Amino acid sequence: MRAPRSWLIFVLAIVPAWTASSAAPPNLIVILADDIGYGDLGRYGATQVATPHLDRLARQGLRFTDAHSPAAVCTPSRYGLLTGRYPWRHPPASRILSGVAPLCIEADRVTLASFLQQAGYRTGVVGKWHLGLGRGPTDYNRIDRGPTHVGFARSFIIPATGDRTPCVYVANERVVGYDPADPIQVSYDKPIGHEPTGKEHPELLKVKPSHGHDNTIVAGISRIGYMTGGRQARWNDETMADDVTAQAVAFIEDTQQQPFFLYLATHDIHVPRVPHRRFAGSSQCGTRGDVIQQLDGCVGEILAALDRLHLADD
Image 1 (cartoon, rainbow, N blue to C red):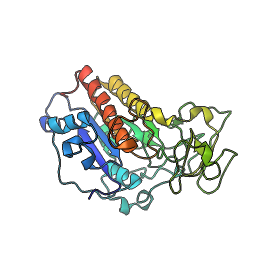
Image 2 (image 1 turned 180 degrees about the horizontal axis):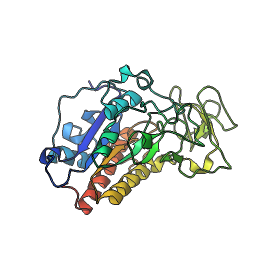
Image 3 (image 1 turned 30 degrees about the vertical axis):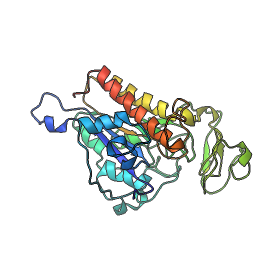
């Protein structure tokens, strides 16, 4: 029986072919897929969804059939992956963080990114972060600590999760599209501002809320937590996968002349599941299957970029 929440990690590299005496180290891409089980992929037996690009990774690489994890939820799994430390050893990283939690990676903690950065890699993170921002409760009008402080030279992130406030992207510790005339406020304690909530106005929703997902409505979806402000910076859920993938491809293109490490943490297939119209209805498993195929399409864009730039063998 597949666990209800799980993660898959896809690593693109040719590490065994490289030694310290080699002319150049290999490029490294780690793709962390959210809330997807191994049984959701064609290479592992799925028949009602099509995952040709992920199947290609398995076919051309190594397919693991015995996996273990120190955590099975958002924040702890990411902390463990990036630090190599058991999350329960560091309480701020041992639980699912809110959208206003401070950065949970210690200032002096060596991370996968900082280690590779010291080894000469250009490092980047794109996608779901969910490791906190700032030195204290996050102020999205002036973020003073984030991915660039723990080894990433470049970042474009979803601060927490797609179903949580704030519903904005953050690039290199600055909200994308930020308007100082419309400051952002976020709360997980009580309502703020005057924007409608899913609990009070379910008629405004395009996605039915689950338990706890009934606070501030953003783009027709009620979220965990409340927010006001930042209206021109808010994301569109239907284009989120494309936004994240475009940033990942841009990082590869901009960094192709030097060894790079890209950590791509997709939103799919985490809730809310709102696939782009080109994927809506594309699978035989409803919306969940559609976003699995959307995830696969995003991986396909990464592979296509590597092929186009003649980096697939490096």
